[in-house]
Amino acid sequence: MTTAISVRNLTMHYGDFVAVDGIDLEVKEGEILAFLGSNGAGKTTTIEILEGFRSRTSGEVEVLGHDPETAPLSWREDIGIVLQESEPVPELTAGESVRMQAAYYSNPRDPAETLALVGLTDSADQRTRKLSGGQKRRLDLAMALVGNPSLVFLDEPTTGFDPSARREAWGMIEALRDLGKTVLLTTHYMDEAEHLADRIVVIGSGRIVARGTADELAAQVNAQTRISWRPAAEDPRPPGHLGTRIDGQGRGVIDTADALVSLHQLTNWATELGVPLPELNVARPTLEDVYLELTSEERSP
Amino acid sequence: MKKLAMIQHQLRFDLLIFRRNPAGTFFTVVLPLIFLVIFTSIFGNNTLDNGAKVATLYVPGILTLAIVSATAVNAAITMTARRERGVLKRVRGTPVPPWIFVLSQALAGFVIAMVMTVIITLVGRILYGVELQLETLPSLLISLLLGAMGFSAIGLALTTVIASEDAAPAVTNAIFLPLYFVSGVFIPDSEVPDWVGTAGNLFPVSHLNQALQESFDPFAEGAAWPLNHWLVIAAWGVVGAVITLKTFRWTPNR
Image 1 (cartoon, rainbow over the protein chains, first blue to last red):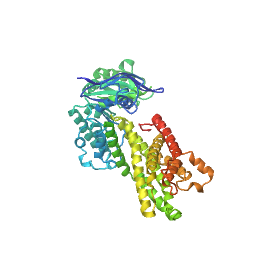
Image 2 (image 1 turned 180 degrees about the vertical axis):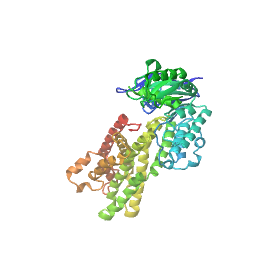
Image 3 (image 1 turned 60 degrees about the vertical axis):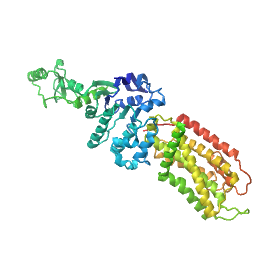
């Protein structure tokens, strides 16, 4: 398989603020890659550099064989973009919007068929101002696809959607796979990345903190068990070899691969010193927990 | 040839969008006609010494209003709204050269200005006996083209200082409404103090008005070549175009 996107040591500074701090990324042709992170993690900055909307501070970027900063206009023939925030022209109908967009490309898809692909055939003659939020997002997708691109960027395609609208959007993004498109999508929903993507890249504070398939990330997570309790302020801290830390909610946390041994050591220590372990809990963290932690740990100074 | 087809395509959509925008069509199409009716009702429509009707003198000012509204005001409001809604950013993501969208907006202004000239002179002729001299027609066309291009460039330059979609009508009105008053659009130059006319003369609205006045002047003979006025409009247009080229933004402020 050929490489659609290749990024090496990408950085982006806004004055003193480092938005992107040395990212490496590779997206293969026909692959769906999710770029997962919280708000302000650097997702949009990165995707906009790849889309050619922003220039970068340093690093090497190649998208479909070109550096986006210097690519000729014809490079855009093969790229479809759904921006994080964009409105259609309110005076036009959905059908007119797609037809207007289609003419910008040399080999566009049939506009009517593209509307059908996103399920907007019945709304083709509606003014876009009358469309619901979900319908507008589908129109965004139709306008990104009508040029018949091989690579599609989706910047937070379902943010602000209710659950049923999200399911619907997922169905459409899955249809892109059947069309053989390469897709790079950003999201801050773990379940969305898990559901849609072949591979997930987790970004926090401009750095990649984890990457792999959903299964690989889950395997890393499932190997760990989390022991936690709520220590009182005057309680002594457990000995260092247990690897205890205090999380954001003030709970004592031990992440361990060998729950039996760790638990035994903890309770032994607690019994000897007479330390109560209120709210003691032994659980397997979900992927969501780990993701939240990965991204929030990176954020704290 | 492909570029020409693209301009045609975009122009067709820009005109469609204009037609369906109630605010734009009211201020550009309906309001000038209302003014024509009001002026003739208030100031009367006497017959002049040479048989021409007084309403003929109102037409250039009303045309100026329609042209500035169809071009500068419309371009500033439309393009600011498209920028802030991400419409411009989306088209930057396509293989179309960006200048096509700018040129199409200016051409749309020219087409609307032409249509308004026809409508206003027709209504003026039917209701008030306004005459259009055939010999000044070429001069009128040049004034229209130059005015449309120049004022579109000014409108596009203005988008740079307009931060949001909501601010666009306020900023354009704050600029052009006073200019109409000092440029002989609503009140003839002869009725205002000298300094007002002098101040108005610094700006292009007054010169478009005067250029159009020469085309409609019932006492003048010949083709009317208001070169000095054209020069001022062109100079302002060039300034607008340079500012646009240097500062026009395609991405939203927020």
